[in-house]
Length: 482
Image (cartoon, rainbow, N blue to C red; front, side, top):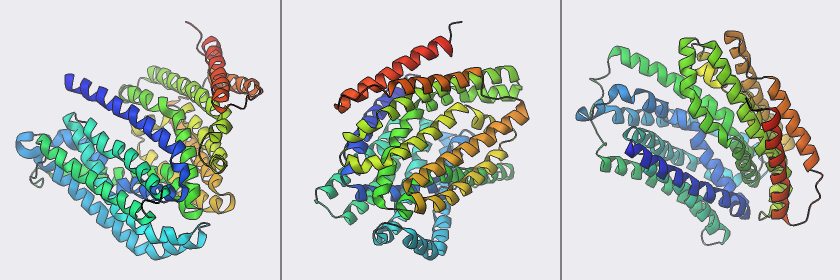
C-alpha cells in the first residue's frame, strides 16, 4: 500500500504541474504560431484516433488479460511479446489501409481544404511513424501499471509532450528552426518516449522476452481474439466519435483553425474534470449492482451521479461562458482566438449532456447488452464524420463543434433509452430540471453586471459571483439537508 500511496501522490503532483504547463501553453504560447501548432495537433490526432487499431486493442488487452498471464518466474508467459506483436500487426494492417486509400483521401483533403493544402500534403505522411511510436509507448506504459509504476510513464507519455510541443512552437515562432524541423522534432520525441519506456521496463526487471505460444490454450486464444476484435473496433469507433473533430478541422478548413478549435476545446474540457474521479469511484459499484440485479441501489447511484455531475457542469460551464470574452482579451492574438467562442459553447453543452446522463454508458458496457455499445459507437462515429464533412466546409470550425454536440447527444440519448427499456431506470429527476432552471436564472442575472474593463477583475467578479450564487441556490433547493 505504501508504494501505491507514494505513486499516487507523485502522479497527482505531476498531473497538477502538467495541467498548469498545458494551460499556460494553450492560452499564451500556441496562439502565437497558429499554423505550426495546428499542424502538430493534426498529426498527433492521427495517433490518438488510430490507437485502438494501431495496437490491435493492445491497451485494453494489457489491462484485461495480464492477471491471466502473470508469473514473473516464467516471464509473465510472454505477455509483453504478445502485446508488441499486436502492435506490429496493428501498425502493418493500418499502414496497408492507409497506403490503399492514400491517393483518394489525399486528393479529397487537398480539394476540400480552405487553407494551404501543400503544407498538410507535405507532412501528413509523417503521422505514420509518429503514431506508431506513440502507440507502442502507450501500450508499454499501460503494461507498466501492473507493477504499480505510474509516475515515470506519465512523465514520459504526457508530461514530456507538454514540454516539447510548446518548446517547438516557440522555436518556430522565434524563427530558430523551420516548420519541418518542428515536425521531425515531434517524431524524434515519440521515438525517444518509446525507447524510454522500454528502458524503464528493463530497469524494473520486467522486460521479459519469452514465448507466449505454449501458454495460449484454444479457449484463451478464442477469448483473446474476440476481445481484440471488440476492443479494437469499439475503441476506434469511440476515438472517431470523440477525437476526429480537430483532425477534420485542420484538414478541411485551415491549420490555424485547428489550433483555435483545440484551444476552445481545451477550455471546454475543464468542465468535465469532476467526471473522471466520480466515474472511477462509481464503476465498481455499477458492475456489482448489475451483477446482483440490485435495481434499487442502481437507480439511487444513477440519479445521484447524474445530479452531482450536472450541477458541477453547470457551475463550471456558466463560469467559463460568462468570462469567455474577457479571457480571449488576455490571450495573444485574442481577436483570432475569439473566433472559437461558439466552439466553446457547443462543446461545453456537449459536456453538460454527457454529465447529465450520468452512468448510462457504464451501465450498458458492464451489462449483457454491451454489444449495443459497439453498435451505437459505430453509428455515432459514422454520423460524426459525415456531419463534419458536411458542416465544416459550410460554417468552418463551428460545424465540427455542432457535429460533436449532435453525435454526443444522440449517443447518450440511445444509451439512456436502452437503460430505460432494459432496466426501467432514468438518470433524471425533478431536481435535474430545477438545477437547469437555477443555472439559467443566475446566469441571466449575473450577465447584467457591468464590465470594469479590467479583464482579470471582470473574470473574478462575474464568474465568482455566478459560482457563489449557484452553489448557495443548489445547496438550498437541489441538495437540501436531510
